[in-house]
Image (cartoon, rainbow, N blue to C red; front, top):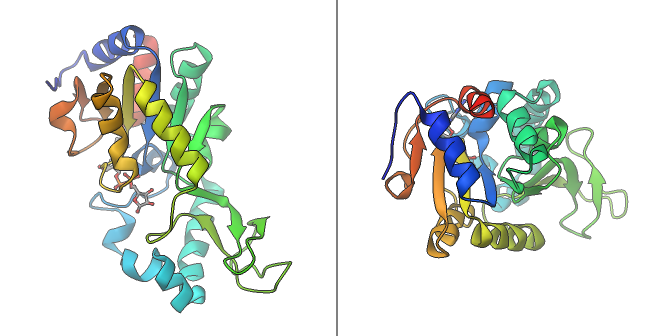
Length: 241
Ligand code: APR
């Protein structure tokens, strides 16, 4: 059953303490307080850009320059972003031995910069660029990089619609979700598969679900706790609970 009230943080703290190990699954909602827009909320990126034109592998093959224009904007926003209270709270919970790992759909690297050590990036990262022609990977420091090995235009090292997720990362994420006593979802609408199947992995193995998210997700009815509030505020209050 879901429970919303002023002692959400106390309830969440109790769940984390009693349902170990706790694994965290984050989405774009944990980074909006760092100035990085999310995708599906009313101010999200997909309300201004059509993902079919900018975020699919076919779109990239069709017009890499156009996709790089989009990513140049994202690179700018990401370069200015700093970890926020939500990222810092998760790193502190890991230090206290209360969070085993963070599985993130985000490509911004803010969890690592906040001090989280066990971070699984299931949608890749904007830190690198990859070459579709020869597989070369290089650090991404500017838009439209050309492959140092074969000269082709490289793509951002993020998973685009129509691409497979990094196999190792998704296997590890699935294993962590399967073994989790509690999967804590923070800032994700849980609408994009296969990541959106991770809560099912936890529930079907007998684990529990807690969700901190502004707005509904498809799993709200199956969560032991749903906090419809801000990630930063909820997770900082949690630290003090
Ligand atoms: N605190 C809590 N929740 C928030 C906050 C916040 N400060 N800001 C936004 N949210 C909520 C939004 O209301 C929304 O429900 O976070 C959720 C973010 O959902 P999405 O925008 O769908 O982001 P995400 O779930 O990460 O998307 C998954 O979709 O486009 C692809 O590859 C992209 O990794 C991304 C994937």
